[in-house]
Image (cartoon, rainbow, N blue to C red; front, side, top):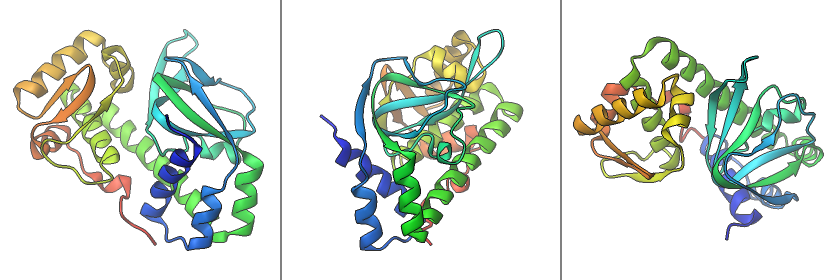
Length: 244
């Protein structure tokens, strides 16, 4: 079973991808108090408009950030994997402009905003690391806007699969890499602006192209270069391995 130490260690790994932290700063992150919460499949754990006082670290599973139209229809605007503090920005803006929902079962670690602010006050390098983490989330959102607005259906799906492979692999992407995949075809459609039927067709196109194989609960990269070519994927926006 995952625990808070697992989640905090994963988040520290994410922070140190892009920020140089000393031993004292690393220890401070690993000592953050909070509470571990198990979330059942497809449940909102942050509601639209909710005033929150804790940020949610994904420990196990996957979560989605959603926007919602007046009709009630939702669009996935971000996917968060283990090690992501899904709403770190809520420390500065505590009224939730988007909802967070589990995609499949997931475990989260809730950390009080007050404790995160205290770390930032005591350790300026951590304040910068937190800021940089939010900037990367914004860069991903910007890339998604381009993908949804300008790429073809097969390219949208290929791009998302390539991005997640890169994030799960911490930038180490290659043929044969596999990762857990809790999304249904309907949820993948919500992230790419496609119907489930269209998603099914695009997954078949990508498999027949020898790029990727998506099965229930598992994705396997067959040909990394081909997947990137189809999805017009360039990982620079992820800013991986840029500690500074």
